[in-house]
Length: 259
Image 1 (spheres, helix red, strand yellow):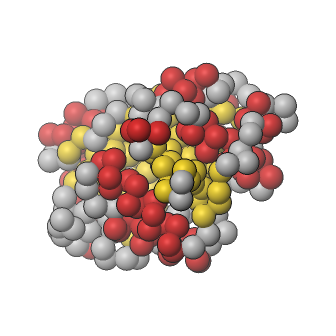
Image 2 (spheres, one colour):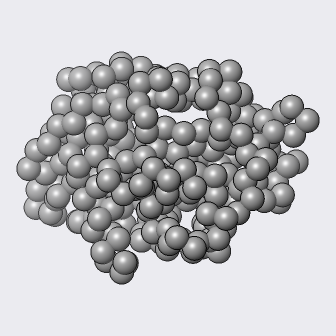
């Protein structure tokens, strides 16, 4: 599959037609909006169709919409979105720019090395205790609370068949963890991939990636995607992932604070 074909399929399945668990999808002529059905979580805009002529008016309208809902929201902007200065326009309107992430995608061939990579030491996590251990791991690495994420993962795990979680333990301690959502007809989105500093450079990231790749392929979702940090991007490139562009999460505080 060519790069432009992958990008078009990604936009169609993962931006235009997706409805994540726990959200209500709303579509207008200009945006696809997802409103959280849980008041402790923020909503988001995953796709937009704007021009320089109408962008400011639409942005103001979305701020008003989420203020009425009393929800914070994130506007996910990809580097190939129009207008080309959308990130700047959002910043001018009070949105806070998140870190740049690389959109990395790979269609898995039947003989890809990840599908035969050793994952015997990777454990699938299927209970609340395991999810809490993942959140504790994330908090120790990033130094802030992941309680709301843990609640969402447990809720999604119980109520959908789209979420799988994995961890690697050493001496009974969870040292590396990641999870995956099956989305659309073809995609599996990879999340997490965090490892305690003292346990890095042992191949844990690749093993967790391989475990999820095997599950995704088995479930008929052969295209993997990752919003990759600068640390993860070179590892993914070595695994055959292709960068389709970059993305920014543009957060607007809106009508309600969740601090």
